[in-house]
Image (spheres, rainbow, N blue to C red):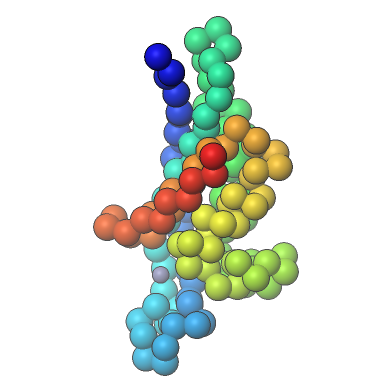
Length: 126
Ligand SMILES: [Zn+2]
């Protein structure tokens, strides 16, 4: 029997964005805000009954969440020269978090971005 254990930690951030590639007149092209929810998933081997300390996940992920919190994400994208954040769709936000977190959190197995209560983007890494 193979058992896989995955744990998850949720982060929230309030940010503004606009999606410059949406058609003229589309509501998502206008500047607007969301209460975003980032859900990070960790997969790996149990060591003494624990996969990873949730506090350690927070220590690694929170600085990147703080970069976007109460900011215009497109502007952050310009500041750090990230094409993904300059077009901050849920998909690109998930890709950006994967890009910045994978090198320092190799156990990261998936990312979920909720833009609203009824929409989500799910990115599976392994
Ligand atoms: Zn939006």
